Length: 217
Image (cartoon, rainbow, N blue to C red; front, top):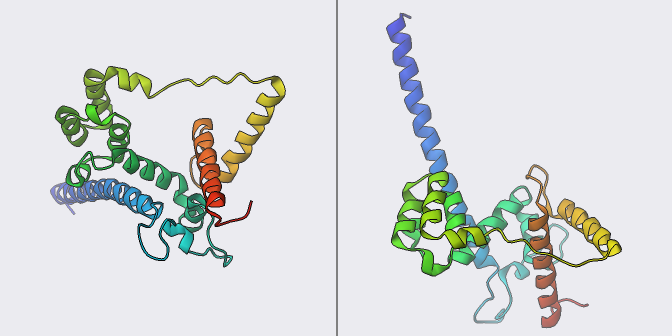
């Protein structure tokens, strides 16, 4: 094969890889959106019929033959290797609600959707929506900084608890334990903040089921 033929083949391969990467990136964003929508639907109370008031995950059984007792338990049984990703997608879709049309969300990256969802609805102005669609994440952050600097700063907020030493030690111990229990093999380790959020969410869902009489104390 002469040099020109090699160059032509390499150029063709580069173009093929380019198209594949673009396609994969597009599907990742689309899959994140759809994952969030479906998880949110699964955790929404049924509005009518025999199962009114129940959430759809409560209708299903795990591999042990027992009904699921929480959304997180269903998630761990259904997609254990994507547990944290699904929670992030669900949270993003919950915060966005109906404030941004789906056809616009379909053109955004997952990172931009997540950041957009953390802005108050009144701050999701056309300039920010357009930037979320058109800009890579780093540039989108700059646009948010320009139009909503206070909100961007508020996204990182320090919470202070006044604990004695024994309480602090116990909280640290429980956070470490919960981080292991909530993380799935192959997933990035959960941060302390994520662990606390998910653990409290798990407790709240369990408490709601107890109130409904669906499970015993």
